[in-house]
Length: 71
Image (cartoon, rainbow, N blue to C red; front, side, top):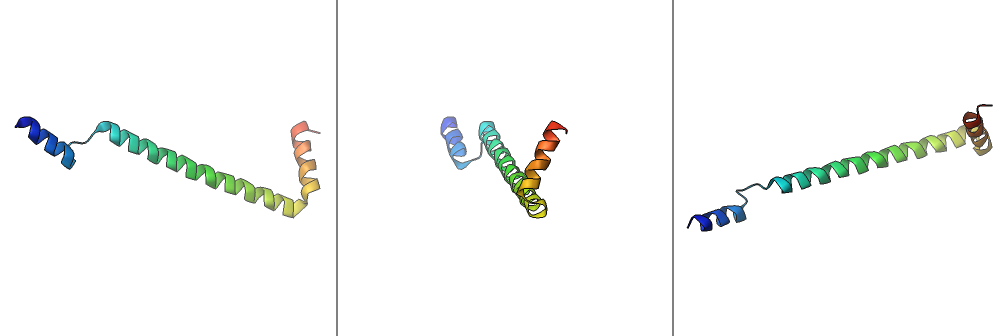
């Protein structure tokens, strides 16, 4: 009878499995990281588009080369 009660409680969700909680927390963490990565990528594209509009593509590439080489 003890075993039947335990199975009934487990099926009703009375027992909380630590692995299920850890898995859910891990999935939530991955979701947050993916959302932040998408926001950072969108911000980078917006900055690139703003730079192209402000200075033009040729000056943007020239400035990039100057920044990398230091000349």
